[in-house]
Structure formats: structure tokens, C-alpha cells
Length: 363
Image (cartoon, rainbow, N blue to C red; front, side):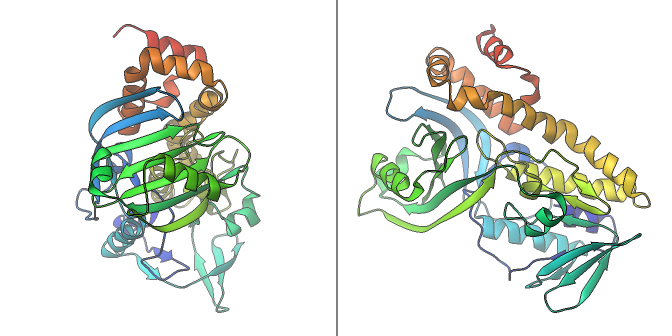
């Protein structure tokens, strides 16, 4: 997102990718409405399905809640989606360097030197680092990520009777694993099925995933493929998010929801915000930094702070959470849908007590 925004402005933009595109990406591929809404209208990207139903289930119980919200999320193949972002940036004038590994970033008075694996050195006025959770360059400059959690996912080509149960749905199964959840996303001809620990100790995900798959009713007739694992940041860095002329965005900055681990929205928002700050204050790194913080404060930092206040309610105080689902399940699900759509802000929830008041407030 940063590259396409910079390129659109006419600034000379180089997009460096250490892999050859399209590259594999471990991700369920849920592009929620608030994220899709900031993409350029003329950008084409492949969509596997559109999900209109959001459902929560508490594993091992009868507790569940769901709501319907038109076009709440599109499901995409992240390899293809990321490639579409790159192609759009190139269309707008960005230069792509593939299979180019940056070994070191060296800050100079008026630019940054990028030392690449071949031994060459590139120079840039600003560097936006979007290297994901395993952020080697970021950690060398900004320190280690505060908290990375494990997840595992696979594509399941299920029997038609199983596939039809999840048509148009995004399903979240709480308590499938301690401190985490499982998910099933409808993707047209198959399902994305995954499991992640969000707020707890790392467990044996392989065994837990196998048990989860069995609990969903899959059998030997259903083809499970492309199973892979990943680490996801669920605690944002405390800042700064810019040092000298080097900026962090997305997972490298720890911008992922601490409840759901959803990070695609924040990656797109932070990338665009970083680029806009560079464009507006190009001649002053100090103003670029201030501008970047101002832009992400409302749309990212305040939202993640609010989510951090609710983590305990979702994963530790389960009896209270389940009671809320029983009493106000549909309203809860609808509230989450409005947040994912961008219609409502998580930051409006300033405390657990405020959250409970909102849930029980008369419509």
C-alpha cells in the first residue's frame, strides 16, 4: 500500500522483495470491509468468495451467535492478492526489484543506504519496512517484537454437504485451544481452516489442529492441503515507529488485533499513512514522523489499545463471556461486524464495564 501511494504521487519509488513474485503467504485471506474500502477503485484483484455471515461458536458448548452483514469480507488468496498490490504499484510507476535481499540499513544524514546481499548499495530518502512478523531488519533497529504467537492453517476441499454448511460464512470457534480459537472461512470451492493461540502459552498446534479438523466433521474424503504455520504479532510495539528515515508498518510494527490476530487492515492503513506522511512532509523527517503518528493514532493505535482491554474478557473470563453470548449474542456479533466494516470504532470501548453497558443498552 505504501509503494502504490508513493508511486501515485510521482515520487520515485522502489519496491524491494526478497522473493520472486507471486510468493507464498500464510494467511486465511479474510479481507474485511474496512480494509477493502481503502483500496483504489481501479485496482483489480482476484476474490475467491464474499462472506455475508459472521458466526461465533464456543467449542464444546451450545453457545453461539451470528449475524448477517452484506459483503462483510472478501476471501482472497494472499499470494495472488499481494501480487495484485505490487502490479498496481508498478502500473503507477514503482520499480520492482525481486529476489533482492537487504542485509543492512544504514542511516545517513539525508538518506538511508540499503546494503543488499549482492554487495551493492542502494540509497533512498526514506525506507518503509513492511517485512512482516519475522522482522530481522526491524529488530536490528527497533528491537525485538513484544509478542509473537503461533498459528496453523490449511485449505480443505470438502465434500459438497460439508462445504454447503459454511457457504458465505466466516466462523470463529472459541476455546478450541486454550487462549485461542479456530476458524473456518468459506472460499468458494474450498475452506480455509486454521487454529491459533492468541492469548496463552504455545501449545502443540499440530495435534490440536488434527483434533479440530475431526470435530468439524471432515473425513478421509475431504482433501486437506497446503497446511502451514506462521507467527503473528499480537502486541504492538510501543514506538517509536520511525527512526531517522526508516518507518515500520504492518506486522513489523506489531499492528495486529490482539483478540483476533487480524492484521491485514492495519497493514494497509499503516502503509498508506506512512506514504502520505512522506508525501506531505518530504523535506523534514521530524515532521514525517509526527505526521505518521497523527495518522495512525486514531485508526490503529487507539483501536489496538481498546482491543487489549478486552482480551481478558474473551480468553480468561470465559463464564462472563459465555453469559454475554447467551443473553446478547446476536448484538455482540453485530457489533463485531460493524467494527470489521469500519462502521464502528473499537476505541469507543474504553473499559470492560463500558463494553457491557453498550451490549445491554436499549436499541
